[in-house]
Length: 260
Ligand SMILES: Nc1ncnc2c1ncn2[C@@H]1O[C@H](COP(=O)(O)OP(=O)(O)OP(=O)(O)O)[C@@H](O)[C@H]1O
Image (tube, rainbow, N blue to C red; front, side):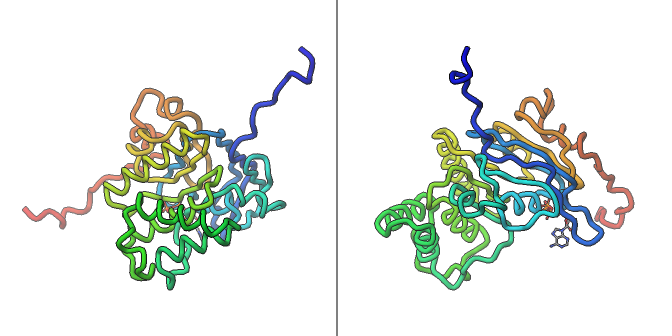
């Protein structure tokens, strides 16, 4: 076959090489390399303090790495930030929203800031408020939203411009079961139509049911990555996670907690 007929595989949706970050003496992320295939529903799991948020913050251009590179569909996040970020939707953990705006205003301005036309922004804003069950609260200030409502409005701002890659840090935390099911449907439909979702979560059962791929990190290191079936290797993802990460404690020493 001549070389013109050889098509190279598509660039991964997210490609991380040698990514590292240190805070003082603490190595938060220890040289992680990882490819997220285009069109995958990718779970990032790890215990508290594993380095998930730090990794995702660097991957999305919110936090400058000490070492390593990140590319979104082949575009370097740190040397071509505008181009890379134009195809990215981000739900960050703990980043302040412009919460003196109403929910409707926040989603609208997110669309306008992305350079979208007013009519499209208005239509999509109402669609998002409806599917996320935020219509009644649409004109309330975001500062007065509950934790779950805040999470949902932040998700709407990440979706408005129809990005190719969605990076969601703990999207289901504090969200009620009906809204969580709606969000899962939206994300599955999005992946089914060519999008890529990267989601961090502590809920192994959810990751096992929802994701096609998973990476396990602990102590800033990548312990395993692949399809969910490859990583769980015949066990439940939760059991596999515990055996990879270790650290199951005992409750010895808390006898004072026994009330009878
Ligand atoms: N801004 C910071 N300054 C100092 N240390 C930090 C900072 N951000 C994170 N760390 C430390 O880096 C490590 C990784 O934190 P990170 O928030 O990435 O973990 P995580 O996997 O997202 O945890 P969790 O599941 O609890 O949200 C932790 O030890 C944390 O204390």
